[in-house]
Image (cartoon, rainbow, N blue to C red; front, side):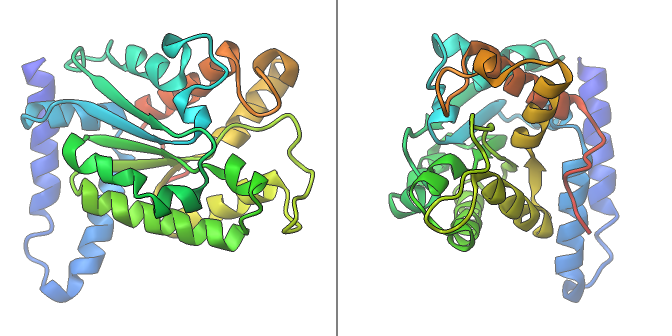
Length: 261
């Protein structure tokens, strides 16, 4: 394990050294390059690197009821539990732990107003997975523009609370009905599409669970009824699909959704 982790640290130090000779006026460019390199590094390797640097491998997740796991038969069938169990098979991550902050019914507005991300200050996570609570924004008729502003504020707060953490933003799962419009004149799918564009425009790391989940059930000819507990929440099978999408992302070095120029 030491040989693998030593190689990861050496590569990390070399990437930092390449930035030493730039002037302070280039600091924003340097920061974008550094963040791009972190994003392109597979997330499981980032966790391994943290272990070598003496940090406990911790993933903090924050979001709504679909992060909490509503609809699953138990904690062991939530997407974060399934993901963590799979990641523990990677060298050096046997002691990986996760901390779940899923708040049923919460919108981005409520998350922001009640300071729900403040808990991250004490946890010092290596990675934060932020599920954007769009199901509740849609239901509560929060405009897409306000959702974007709230997401930005929440991400900035996360960066303040846990400055060393890598933040991975995800959309929620599809609902049984995604095209019906709310009082703002927007559909749930509109929320996912428009906030996804906004997130990528800022160069933040993003996994579109909504689209990939939809693609996978269509490819397997599986009906939504078989993967959903109710109109909104996945069942055990649905959460297993969600976990698999994230597992593939964590193990991949081809981050098509991340580091937009």
